[in-house]
Length: 291
Image 1 (cartoon, rainbow, N blue to C red):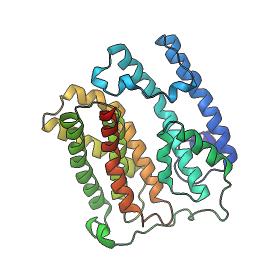
Image 2 (cartoon, helix red, strand yellow):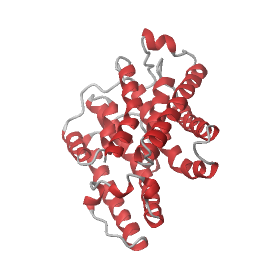
Image 3 (tube, helix red, strand yellow):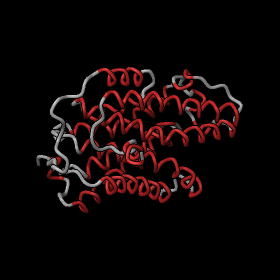
Image 4 (tube, one colour):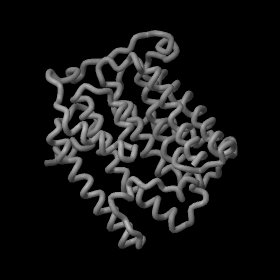
């Protein structure tokens, strides 16, 4: 039983459609009833399945949210993190078993689309023959991007952190100074994308261990916080309050990047995927600003 429970958290390997459906349905039932309990008993709010699909318009600009609403959002996001981790891990493993690229798991966060994705993955059969044998390395071709990224683990880790942190500072400036929007793109999408991008750079020449990948993802967000504090964009108290949310999201992005590394033949679209990741958070911020 302990081994089966540990399998819920791993990003390695594959999962067939039967266990995927059972775990997905049971997980949703547990999470929804937990959310109903938290919303109804603790915060005295109505909560039903459609609450997951309704855009939180009042929360798009988090600086304008009242204290009771902020407390409600923080608690709901915190309780959702373990379910997000398990859901993303299972989705990546299911995509791998079908032979589809793991980056499609990003639609796990899209309302309505995630339901279609779940039904799609529940119906398609697993491919025959399995995936890459365990332990077999996946090497990247050199190319222009490959020549820029060091082949050594320490060199690629340093470059990953030194590239993502300044990019994060620039995106933070875009959100705060230009768009003037403290929203989901800043507090959720940015740390997730930074962790994912850092691990994509770190493992470009070949996959590394799960723990080292997550460590690089979290280090990029910590250096981002240091840069924000250095440029006096935010105070130390605000940063300390954001870290408990930012670090798990960065770790989640790093775990997804680690899963992408281990997919056979994943090298060719790597530069394109990295560019898309870099533009994803600003895109969410622009959408929030327009809304």
